[in-house]
Structure formats: C-alpha cells, structure tokens
Length: 310
Image (cartoon, rainbow, N blue to C red):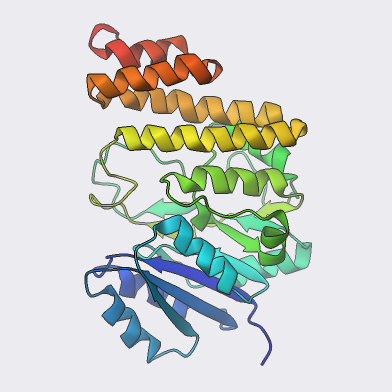
C-alpha cells in the first residue's frame, strides 16, 4: 500500500464536547488519501471513548495514547509517525472546511511549495476573552504570488497581520524534517517559535484566499487562560531560541529583531495584570536582556499602569 498524500495530526486532551466535530471535519474532507493520526495526551474525560468510536467508522484513523506530555511533545510524536507527503496540524476543539486539504494539496503540488497558508474565522466572536486575534492577511498578500519566507514574514510583520498558529499552514513533510523544525516541549506559545522558524526556513510559499480554519475560543483553553508569569517565562524562552537562531543565521537577524519587538512589546503591556512581584521580575528581564524589544511606554505601563494613560 502506498503512503498517503497527507498526514493529519490531532492531539487530544480533554475536549470531549468538541472532539467529534473536529475529527469529523477531517473525516469528511473531499481529499480521501489521508491518514488521521490522533494522539490522546492523557485525557481524563471521555475524549478517548469518542475517538475510539469514530475509528470504527473510518479505517484511516490511527489512535495513540500516552501520559500527558503537552501539545509540543504530542505534535512531535505525530511528526515522527507521519508517512504522508504533507502534514497538517489540527486542533481537537476546532474544525476545518471540507475542501481545505484538497485545495492545499493541489496548490502545493502544482507549485512545488514548502508550505501553503490560509486564514481562519473565529466561531464565537460574541464572547469577550480579552485577546485580539488577527486572521486576515488577504489585504497584504497575493494568492498568485510565490514568496520567500523571510520576505513574506517581513510583509506580515510590517502590516501587523502575522499570526503564528500552526493550524493555518499545510506543510511539505520532507521540508519540515530536513529543517529539523520541531515544537519545543514544555512551554506554551510553542507556535510562536515553530511557525517563525517555518517561515524563515522556507523558500517557496503561497497563500490560499480562503478561511478554511474555524477557531473556537474556550474559557478553559491555553489561548484564553488568564495571563500569568508562565506566559512571560515562555515568551522569554522563545526569544532566546530565536536569538540563537539569528546568531547561526545572520541573514535573519533583522527580521527576528522585528518579530521579537512585536511579540515582547505586546507581552510587556499584557504583563501589567501580573502581581507586583512578578511585574518586577518581568521588568528586570526586559531591562537586563530584552531592552531593545520593548517600548519605554509599555515598560512603564508594565510597572505603573495606574499612573500611565495607555
């Protein structure tokens, strides 16, 4: 039996309410030549029961279970297991439009791409989770143009429309393995590192002018969870890895500097919510290691927001 054209990796952790819809959106794709790799990351609810029942309907589903290791380690296991020509990372609480994978495959095959990207819609915009997500890049990119990764990343950063979500990219698996780009285990904001490196390593990228991905915001998800010192610790870890990458690849230094300023300057503003002890720690890190990546205004807001008119 020949290898499938696309491997879909779906980490699952306690998403019993949404996981069936997510998996069915992959089962119902118009592209049938796929393998569906579902990794149960130590769920304590009924998620595993649900995906086991779904596997009885579709022989393409492969289920693996492990003790909880986190999203990065789980996706990395999926990369190791994948046998397709392309790979797509799906979240277990969202869903994908039926023609997404077929359209992406066609675009990649016709243009010999390292990856293709598309946009998203937010399912429950009416809820205020106090986060601002940008999933609209069609005003600044042309779906008929072939991009170099560094050039494209600069375009998106300059227009404030870069988004790091791994779920918006359909990736050539051989390219991913050759660049040895994996998700960093043990952190949150793992996409901030993975997707940035994905862009920096790519030479052939195109976009698809469709909002294939439907993102659901949940109060108990990593994305909407209350901002904490751990968020900042992980932003700093991501920054250190990107600075090390820039040191090894000097041609990327200016782009990475731009990226880090946008990421860390926004994070400094969010950090005003932290307890005083944590704010002092974060401020000391900025001053000691990351001063060029934060505006004076946001550094002051971090420390004295009640006294500063934002």
